[in-house]
Amino acid sequence: MSLLVRNIGELVTNESGPGRETGPLGILRDAAVLVDGGRVAWVGKTADSPDADEAWDAAGQCVIPGFVDSHSHLVFGGDRADEFAARMAGRRYEAGGIRSTVAATRAALDDVLRARLAGFVAELHGQGTTTFEVKTGYGLTVDDEARLARLAAEVTDEVTFLGAHVVPEEYADDAEGYVDLVCGPMLEACAPHARWVDAFCERGAFTAEQSRRVLEAGAARGLGVRVHGNQLGPGEGVRLAVELGAASVDHCTYLDDEDVALLAASDTVCTLLPGVEFSTRQPFPDARRLLDAGVAVTLASDCNPGSSFTSSMAFCIAVAVREMGMTPAEAVWAATAGGARALRRGDAGRVGVGARADLVLLRAPSHVHLAYRPGVPLVERVWVRGQPV
Ligand code: NIG
Ligand code: FE
Image (cartoon, rainbow, N blue to C red; front, side, top):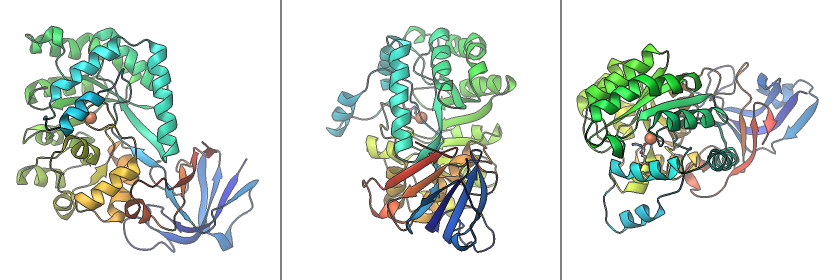
């Protein structure tokens, strides 16, 4: 069954082409999109539309490509609302809080985690996110990490093995022994379910050398590299990510000029996570400085129970525009095409022939409203691979 979404007042394509306005979003006005077999089959003016089995009238509103959330930690047990409340009363965020979610996750049955995950997927779809990455990292034993990777793979192709999230309690005196486990049996058990490997390169988590061992072992096993870096202070995460040709280095809250120059000259995307600074009361990263230096900047939710328990990409856009110096157009690009680049997916984050038919119809005439109307649910209808969800 083919579907024509017609009468779109503002279509964000993220592509250049005939009739597209200049600027990162490749906006086409009075547009229509033909969907067939889960892919975009045609894009043009409503007046020139081909016939289709079904039609949907967008009533002059805005359509954007589905959000691509390239960073989340959605398989976990429990929550940390008490930790959040304590933080808002003045306590500092520390990597060690991860261990309490590890305990709750190990104690949770598969079906409990599966139901939780299904709830998050519905939450993501309802807010316009149509492609999302999910990390392991709250199991930290061979069996628990493999279990989380398997569960994540039930809902996404973008699974990331994050055995190097934090050193678990039982290895507190033997971090090197834990890294051996991660690089050996844990990687073996998780790799069949994963596309990516990640490491939390930070004070209180893993050193650059330990992170390098994990990332190189993952790459040798065929996984793409991603890095958590420069979140809680200056560090070596960005340098390591660029050196290893990582697809993305995420957080990047504390960068020196050398980090920025290295990123600008690399293929490594810089993924900013505004929900983290919002929820931990840390200073926001300076997206403007990165964009002006020519760095590819992406936005993601980092949805997790500790540092950022939001799954809303629209919220991330609003905060990035208000607090991080991005224009609405840059932020919408970063949350769609940018996310696709961070996941090295050429067929997501854009509305062009051959791309996945992941479309979001907004209850708003333009993409600017995503930042202009913070907290307002503007998603009217979502199609994932051409199917309404
Ligand atoms: O991306 N930085 C490391 N991991 C998560 C936090 C996880 C947690 O606090 O549970 C993050 O912020
Ligand atoms: Fe994270």
